[in-house]
Image 1: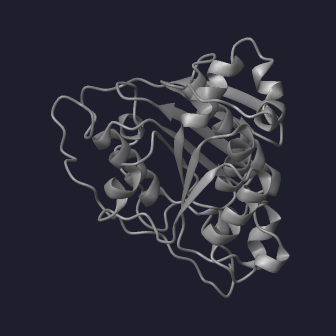
Image 2 (image 1 turned 135 degrees about the vertical axis):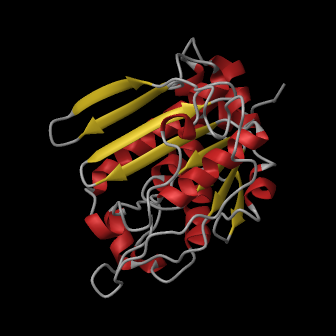
Length: 274
């Protein structure tokens, strides 16, 4: 049992007042270890809300630096942070929000040769990336390691998310593999309304907190999509498939793969990959 100080009881009082959370739920939040892959549009609100909620340990994976074009949506960074490594800027903001949170920075890109090692020390993983190769890498690594995770993706005015726990439908149950490089644009190629990142990131943060507290129903076996132009939200049922190449009866994906990533003309699309 964690012995909260008077200051912490005051800080988390609005959680503790919730009968579905209470002191016990806040203790579970305090003991939780969450890895966020990507300190960009999605990772920013996720990290800030999880820090405010009192998650005990937050890991951040990102090898990129802050670009001026990031500031339209990546709210964890500010103008003076341009040129700094994102993990350093994010850590500074998280600790300013809640000094009691342990922040571990992984100043690197998630790859097949480091993914399993990085995620091994965490209880839950949040996908805050915007390219298919890394999304499949996160999915595959988490399924292989038995780690729950939150998938998230945004583009233009739309977002989608689902939550995976061992035994539920994984990303490959619906999509066998990533599309060919360049077939689908990234945010830095097609654009994204900045607030969309906040909308989806806060949903991912809520799913993470629900996982640790056991409150409500997770978005397992369901894909939540929304279109901000019309504010239409929709849930699509997903199903774990026996023929899934990763978690099915006869898996063909047995090791992590670094798929080819799409590139863009930096002169025309000078933006972060988040």
